[in-house]
Image (tube, rainbow, N blue to C red):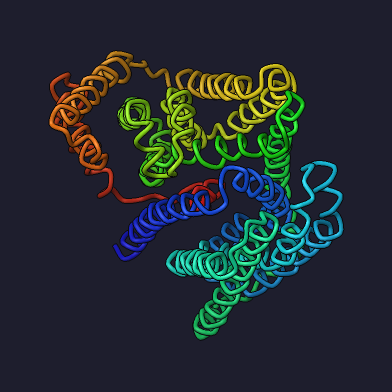
Length: 522
């Protein structure tokens, strides 16, 4: 009973912290866009693409590896100090190598690939944080494996708060219109926050280790770097491929926009508006899905292991239904209230057209996220990796072909084709593996009718009354009407509501080690 409560508590903490950091991340992104503009967001997004790639190399699968090894050894009653020490050595080798490579090649990367010298100083600053990124990942892996999620979550919250606090102070105190200077301040703030978070985790680890060693253990198993390499390298190689291709994609977009005829400033602004502002806004409501899937995916895995096919399809049908209901709600809001949301959130009316154009992709983006998680739970992770690699490869090809010819319209076309391709492959695989019947009436048509009626009723009603400026009131009213119409169309039943609520009361089984990365999204 104690173990069960501990697992549930960790899952709830993980869920709440994911949602909280998602909210904080969105608010921070809005603040940043208002301070540095669309061009600044574009430059910052490019810098972050390189940072994510080098951070992936610095971590090299050590978080997942240590989580697994620590959990296995603690379950046997064995000490894990040797594992963590080898993990430190592994992390330092990869992270210091990544740091040296990024620092020495920052100028080369900025001029040849990013085509913007303003990225040189920010990249050099970020390179100094990579060793701490590696050690931090190592310590996070230890605490996940020891099922002490609160300590990792606390460190992530501390890191985020310090980073945002330093950025707010530095931008307001040393404000400048020079984007290189501003991006350098942001990167310095990020580096300081990672350093503090790493030392905080290390202190917690020292106290935890001293407490654990008061308990009598069996003889410690001799672990070598080879043990860690055998587990971490396959994970790392998969991450290298996906991250590298994703980085190439981000670098190519502004470059191909310049080939179309856009200026450097304009191409960065377009890239920043789409990738740094609109897409994060469209996927923001899916933080609720991330929380729900964290709880429900282990149940899918258990049903599959026990060959409970009817129960498995019952779970999947409910998950897909709720996903599409949320997605249709978000789609309707962003299409009908695109102007109001763009102005109230980003104070930029130019974004409204982009929001309207890309909003129809929301159902496929949300569904693809849930389907990928479900496929991983069904031991189809290699298929998921294959589809993601196909998607990124096709996307890179289309970026090179369409954007130089059609500009921003080509960019939109790339996003549509890529999203449809990836989601179609994943959904088709899920239906094939599970023999699930897709209920297009209750999952698609009725929710679409419900949100159309709700949105336009509220829009007209508020305009007639003369209070159309109250956007939050309109959204709340739309949500209430939408729920009522879902009940009237029998898309949502009392049984569905009970199942959804009970889902948060179920015993939470352990998640596949490879799915732990779902939390690290801020």
